[in-house]
Length: 162
Image (cartoon, rainbow, N blue to C red; front, side, top):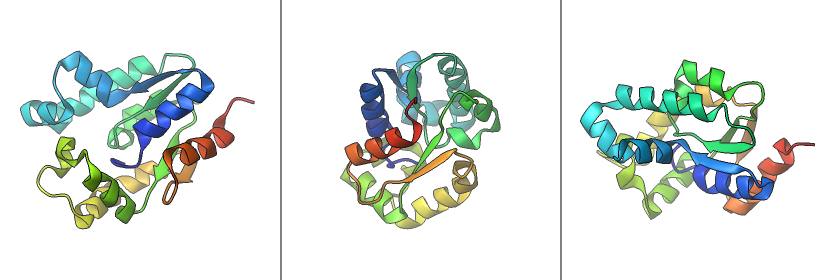
């Protein structure tokens, strides 16, 4: 979910593992030479999701990497095959209040699904539509009240190669 800390925490985990880190939204932006918001505006959400699926398909073949997907990626059934058996899928679960607070601190304007209004109600609506997909994750880590490093350490203990 947007504002949960996927990119920040993902980078910390990748650094600890000495693995590559990919933010799928950033990869798409670099390849398309447009921001996610610009892609949504120019081509629509469906076109963005197709780009996202293509990028995830390619990144999933990489070994020893951490991938932070966009919050909507798990809502596309095809993407689950890329998450695969070799992957540890983690849902960074945050309360709507925490998500709102984080998004208010910065970054909401770059979120196409929040372009009209940033509110607890909008976050609740998005969560309601996505939660059933997020619940498929192999691991759920509550990040409310945790600093990014604490969240990363918690995930590392769950998923680190033994």
